[in-house]
Each structure stands twice: as C-alpha cells, then as structure tokens.
Length: 537
Image 1: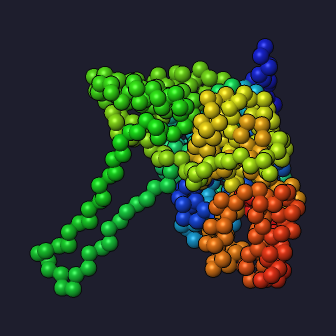
Image 2: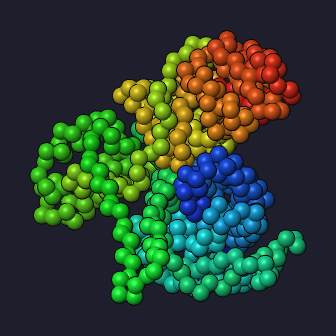
Image 3: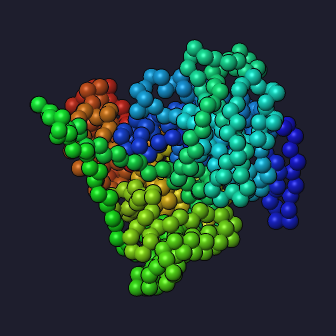
C-alpha cells in the first residue's frame, strides 16, 4: 500500500491509514538484571542501527520507550523490507555474544486506521501492531493479513500462515503470518533496492503464541496528552527460575530412586496501600479507607491513571472482572487511554510486573548552585520525540510536576499533582517501569535539579560502584564521596583507572578543572568521565 488517505476532525486530530511497525526486545529485563551497563550500551547501539534503517526506508518513529519502538511507514512493503534488514543486521551482531546474552527484537507490522495527534499515533492500528510483535518469534517478524496481501507478490520471502489469532483487547481475531531469520546456509533472496537485500528468511513451522506484558497495546503512549498523569511503557519483569541441583549418589540402589526436586513455595505478598505503585496518593488513601476493610470477595486494578476496586462480590473471579472492567472504562475515557491490570485479589498482591525499580532516597534535593530554568532541548539523553513531548506537554503542565529520565532515553513525568513529592514518586515509578532500571529526577516544576552538562556529551548514568573506567580499588571510596555531594561535581579517570574528583564547585567548568587537577596528582592521561550524575565523553 503506497497511498494513504487522511482526514482531519474539528479538534485538529488527523485520521489516516498507515503501516505501523512495533518492535520490542525479548527478555529485556533479564538482560538488564544480569548486566545493566553492558545491556544499556548495547541497547543504544542496536537502537542506532534500527533508527538508521527506519529513516532510510522513509519511516518515522513516533514513540519510543526504553527497549520499545513504534514507527509508521508510507508503504507496507517498505516497512517489511526495513524489518527484515533490521533483524538481519542485529542477528549478525548477536553472533558475537553467547545465546544467554543475545539481544533480539520481535517486530510486528500491520496496516490500520490511526489518529495522529501532536505527532503521536493512536488507535487500533497501533494496538494490533503491538500485539503482533508480542506473538512474533524471537528475532523474527509477525505481520497481519493486510500486510501479507500487499507484500506477498513483491518480496521473495516465505510466510507461514498461523491463522486467526485472538489477541488481548482486540475484539476481532487477527489473521497473522510470521517468518523467522534462518542460519547463514539457508538464505532465500528478496528483491532489493541494493544488493543488501539478500537476507536469510524462513518458512515458519509452528507458532508459539506469547502475550508478553511489555507490548505497546498493553501500554499507552509514553507521553501524556492531558493535564493529568503520563502514560507508560513498561519493560517485562525478570523471571528467575530456581532449579534444585541433581541428586548425587555413590552407590545408587534401583529400589531407592533419588527424590524429585521440590519447587520453592511461592512468596505471598500482602497488600500495603501506601506502597501500591503508579497510582496517586489520594487513590492510595481510598485503598486504605475503602478497600482494606471491605467485605470479600474483592479485587483491585491499577493503571498509570485511574484505579478501581470491586468488593463484596459472589466470588473472586467476579470481583477481578469487575475491578478490571471499571478501571478500564475510566482509563479508556482519557485522551490517551491507559491499560489497567489486576493488582490484588483480597489483600494478596497478584501484580505480575513487581515493583518498579527506584533509586535510593533521597530522590531529589534543591541545590541553588545547580538549579536553572528547564529547557526541553537541554534535557540529556532524550531523542527528538522525547524532547518534543517534554516541550509540548511537560513545560506547559501545571504544578506540581516532575520529570524523570532513564539511562537509555526513556522518560516519565506527571504534572498537576498534589505535591512535588507525589509528582517525583510517580514520575520515578513510571520511568522505572518503562526502562526496567532505576531512573533519576532531572526537573521539578520548571527547574533542573541536577547538574546538566553543556560542555561534554552525556552518554548515560554514571554509577561509580560499577564504572569500568575506574580501577576497582577506587570505586567504593568514590561512590561514598559522591553519595552526598552538592554543587557541581566532576570525575576524571586516568590511564590506570585512578580517579580525580571535584565536589561542590560553583559551575561546570570549575568542576571539570578541579577533577582533572586532582586526577593528575596520581595518574596520567586523565579525562573527564562524569559530570553530576551523568557519564560523559
């Protein structure tokens, strides 16, 4: 499909037909849990590859969140070609890593009706693409029948028809096709604009339907469009599998087989209203006052916007269905719909995502030496879409408000909150859910509250306890000294990994000069590696 109709309504929203591309990393939270810094570095590299292919294919990224990407294309053929190119390029890069550390994307593509508002796309087309991504093979692609009909006679790739798929929150089944990347010795050829289109593809034999919790259809867009809280994109929780060691016997007896390993008992966590994540403080108070003492059977559902609970039902299943239904109806009524999920049944937490990762307190401080007016273009790590969202939504938002960022460019913010503390807490929870790792607060109301470098490029967060540029013997002391540092701070590292530090400087350049001077006392070839909480280069 190369031509798409578009129309505009009276409120400035444009409706159109577009090819929607959704991508997400399989097992991202597990990768982060095993090696956070290495995973984030590779994510930035892989995202650079993906962004380049999308741009060259004429696509436009309209939403990103941590490990996830949403893009639109003017042509289904170009969207599929781009997806194949991305998967082949990333498959080649993954060959340098063991299977447990490979970073593989799933990609879903559909053609659908969407509404464009302030650069973001909403509607069934976006949700269906996200659901197709969720059932795509690891490192492969899943497409809808509408896409298949457009590309089947234009690309020499073989698709496996996996039939009607009933996907969550989409009322009608989606007829889907999938294909997987093959090994190097099995390479079908696709017609190309250049010789690079000789890519490995596969005839899929079976479909493993996986409805991951980290798909876009489960998550609203990352940036809020209304005066109340932002939406979210959440990374999937890490799953730990505990295996008992095999029994060892010196002289096994046939009559006495080794006992089977027993699985550990599941951990049952009791609901504490003050720790329910993502919801507002008033909602937590309602859980405390109205839910906790209510009659069974009861259930609680939450989202990044509204929450709802149902009490005094005939059984737990009825309570769960009612809570989700009430919450989702409220969420769907928002300008940017949210996804409601079951949090508790009775007073037992059943929430699959776990608690959002949060940094250690204090979460923010007011330091006149580093505070300056917020400028959206100066927020570090963000891509263009993120900066545009900050400019469009956060900057004009009502106080109290807070902006959090993740180490790979994810954001979370809330405005029009009851207090700065509530805005900070919700922004960190939202951003942490999105990124899969702890975020930091960079702005409260209309001011930066951390040192934001202007002389060097920010490339991530600086975590002194695990920074490989610093010699291991120096890390603990450096981390301790930076814990309560005020003013502008800078860290320099030399050729042998010895550190130089400047704390409490009045400005960025003074901090840089002081850190380099301190480093030169014990090491050679010193360079600045961190300013404030940020790693720089």
